Image (cartoon, rainbow, N blue to C red):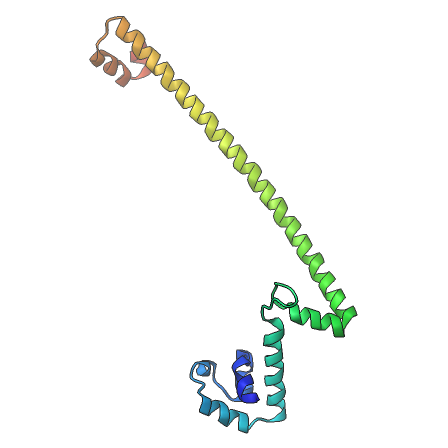
Length: 164
């Protein structure tokens, strides 16, 4: 039985069993048999606990579709008061964290809306300026100025351009 349970042993318990950190992938059937034949009571207890822990915390569809649901159901069945206080403590803590996250999200959305409005305002200003320049170019052409004269006026500093 411990031969099969060794596959669910957590890495933090490897040194207690006599394994190295990298032994997981090199753990052959022969090594498992050798380990299983020479286990102490403490080592057997650790292997059993890790095996149960793995199966109780694994994702199952029998109780609920969340990790650790069987462990939670087991603890509610055997230790209902302790389990309820732990669940309530975690719900309260995560409720506070979720409320703070909701506040941050709301603030970020507000700043995003402000930035969009600002960029939209800048775009309208740019289009208005472009329209003014087009009108000015149209007036200059009507007065008989050539394109070269318009470019020369545009290239000059404002003081000189006003004098022309």
